Length: 617
Image 1 (tube, rainbow, N blue to C red):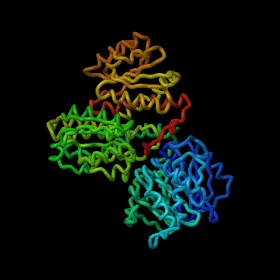
Image 2: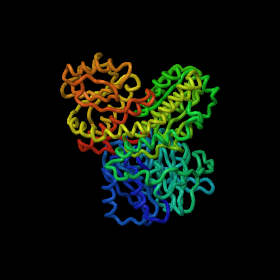
Image 3: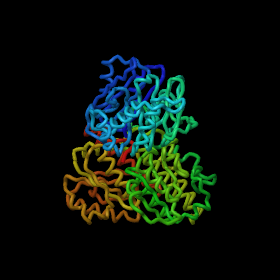
Image 4: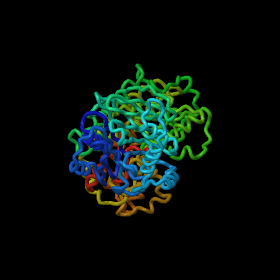
């Protein structure tokens, strides 16, 4: 969601912060700002709009300080204005604060601070917290032995806070210090040579260091140019664990592509190879996962799977549901993470949970994980970020290993989630009643996915032409059946995310139950019509659309014979095993959505109102 960057060292902080903020632009934001300590005072520069505009404003000011922090804001409390942009200053000017998350009891705290003479210039909960820190600092209580009065003021303020936060603060009285803290909002400390960086996302750090410390919930860090120390809200010291980021800054560059989304679409063959690497048995009859922390005997006792996710990851879970039930014959339930913990769903004691999140920081999915664990269930995680909150708190899991995904609209992360879901289905099926030969065929299909995706990507120029002809439409329908119904949902989501076209996904057979009322010459329908047992059923649905003069775009497989003239546009993908068909079928809808958005002049990598990682409810 919002982005945090901090720097304490010997270099000009403003330069480092602006570079870091640019690398966080993909997360989504509407305003930006930074604060630098100069001559014992805090100087703040803020602007509405892109980091590029902030850089222009910073260039007008002479900032040479070596301690500072910066922020990109995605509006929650208060509109998109300079006053509401971060950083916020306390009313006495001593403190500057940036904040990701939501302070739920901010109105009560604000009412109290108003009685103490504190003033406010914004509508944000963040300014309230900043003034609360100033209030505790002004009370001049003696800090604990060896502690900074600055750190102690932040600690005391946070004890009164309800909600979520990732914060970084400066104090004019302590010009060589920064204090940061987290609760359900990611913060990473970068450990460099004679310098430290702070960020909400590793992409802002890797140009300076790949050595990092992942802060945990309830932890605070005091940073100086020479050292850092971590403690808890209860003043307990924490021994830091320094991890190493396994990707380079070059991985987050566009490499000649027009957009990150385009690059990541074409990276998918390699990303899928990485997601599979080392995960098959020697006899190539099943999948292997080293991080589940479950024995085969324990897995055979599982009676039901429960998947929780949000957005695109939820669609991947729907495909996993289909494949696990189809091949492993185990009931599967899929729930939105945001709904799971608020409804008291009856669950079998032998239920195994899976949570799916590319970032590993999705707030609703993290909350679902915690709720499941609270009720005594084992929780597995499928995510792409080593060291993320979900990865650390899950009982076991499977990393996607696809590298950083910068485009807001997920592409390679989604197809790798589909792949891992198919591998889980295989693994559990082979523990049950799938034969050796069927397992070998399944593994062969999985190993062939990268080449199948390469073949599908060769349709890019053809799909671009279709996109140019259909970019002016304002409504679309995406229709599929069985495992391709979730891909229809994903196609509709992709199109609306990046091109702002109203689009909906349905099972093809549901058209007659209401959605067919939308059909007209101005509403194209994208059909998934692969060769197979229900091909004729899908063709029948397509004929119903054509009878009502609706334009039809068909995505079909090699060997399928569509009636002549039934489809206005045809995209052909390779015929393949049903376990990998959803992956291959995803490629055309990614390309179609991307090229339509480009044709409409949309900001593909930074679509309006959206954020890459949703870290607030």
